[in-house]
Image 1 (cartoon, rainbow, N blue to C red):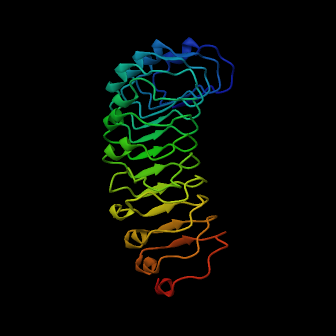
Image 2 (tube, rainbow, N blue to C red):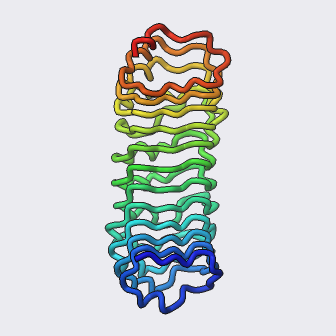
Amino acid sequence: KELDLSGLQFEEIPPEVFSIKDIEILDVSNNPLGSIPVNIASLSNLKELRAADCGIREVSGNISRCSYLNKVDLSRNPGISSLPVTMKHNLHLKHFALSNCELKSLPKNLTILAKIETLDLSNNELTNLPPDISGLKRLKVLNLSDNAFESIPESVESLGHLHCLDLKRNKMNNSQGGQRLNVPAHLKTLDMEGNHSLKLLPEGFENLVNLEELNISYCSVETLPDSIGKLTSMKAIHVAGNRLRRIPENFGNLLNLETLDLEGNRRLSGLPLSLYNL
């Protein structure tokens, strides 16, 4: 059911591959293919396509005829500027990866993939997301790590089912304050580790009543807002490598807290007595 043709220096997928009707996973990564060919439609049972680092500039519209397709990885293909509009018919497509594609903006038609639940846009050059990202109505996990965002894009707030947002190692800077958390209220995981110029946390944590994990390690943060201590669903807080002097007293109210990572906060003078109640 799985065919691995990765790293064979093929310039095209061998024609006989398309006669193997029961292939469910096809890996053609690390081949100089240049495109996803029209005869991909012959693989009617295909569920997963791995085509990373293939020099892909074009994806055939016939990919929509792979009606069971669940996962597509087109990472490390810097020539991709658009997706075929027919992909809106890939109703089983849940996971899509475009990491390391040198993207400065989203490929045309990406936001018509209304059924995807996981989108990996890591290691690109993105600075913003368009308003029509709201078309990704089922999105649960969004990976924006290693891009060039200076703040959380406003359009993220429109992603009504988002549970996990990864913004590690961007260029977020709130040293003057004023930024707000543009995220859905039911977010469960927020990861902003490695935004070294962040300094002050964005406003609005009190609204994230379902937040279970927060990672703001190595963000040059000096203070934590008391509002975090009101998030009673919280299970893990990672604040390693910051400049904290104190921990809010009301952190002792976080009765579900299992992990509090304070490593490397050398200015921290002590812990509130309330923490010993946990």
